Image (cartoon, helix red, strand yellow):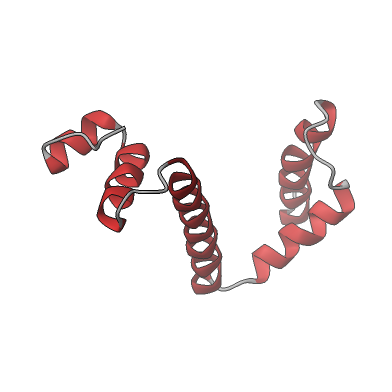
Length: 101
């Protein structure tokens, strides 16, 4: 077995399950190109993409909290986000009291 055989096997495992169950609108060829791009990225660039994606999700969650709690202060919104993000049990261990719901 060559390194190329292993690489093709990884590509097949990464693409086939999505198409069997209809969970992806990305073609196998486009997905292979995307994986090749990721493989060519430096670890620092990959980390930056992860961080940017996490930050976008956090901002979307905060926007949803602001919509549901329009009169909440920044501190109250942060506590609501932290409780939602950490879960009530961990939030209470870290901060001592649950945020208002």
